Image (tube, rainbow, N blue to C red; front, top):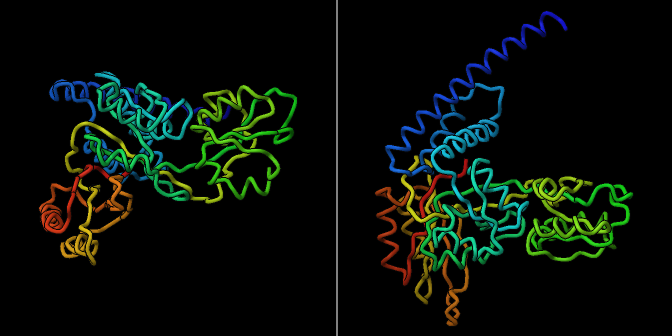
Length: 357
């Protein structure tokens, strides 16, 4: 071994000793703060501020995304010293929902796999889970309507969001005597994933039968039981069910991203860069929607999303899901919402929360 390499390794060892000492010092401070907060271990606005500050001060060469991952894991480990969070997600294990939960809360949590999005909401409402993760929209396939419908009536608040880059993989059992895509007779996957990989499937496995599964995790579980089957899912599913990935990044859109909501029982304080989600209903008259949105423009408030859904009351009325830039506690937004209330028949604030980091 060269003297230069030996010297560099000694320097790394010295830095690692400092990192270890500082990590434990940070953990001790976090424990003290946890005692002062009377057991409240997760503050979405504070954690978002920490990640943003570290990204802004980062001199490199580590990229901003790596800084985000590192600090979320550090905060996750510090939280767990007080009380590990129990996070409900759409199961079984290996789904993109579980991956989103890990990305947002880190690995030092307890996962609660739920059979449906409805069960995710119920678990948090009943206190069986500290928080929940629910998909709300995909850049390719659009809105997840069940999540929107549940938000209309649920007492839960949106306290965060997760933007997950969805990388679809084709996977199957290993040690079958068959390699690659040879001998695949059926492919399991969730309906949205099949839609996201439609063109790739047409070009590469157009004669293979596809079967919709309740989730990508369930698709991977089914493929693990059948040597002639494959699944389309994420890397986490391959890891959870011991499958071999035979093709990566098979989604048709290179920037395929799913947005998830973090659901909790308490409101979130301003973080400095926030988003407010609300749902409202316009009175049934010409120009009603324009009247609702005009106060936002009048108060110079950015609109980042507008989604319509049937009101589900059987009268052909619609509700509108709106995301605006800023926290509803801001006086400017308060004034705009007051003006909107004069023109709408229904208004519900779904939550104000930090923009995804």
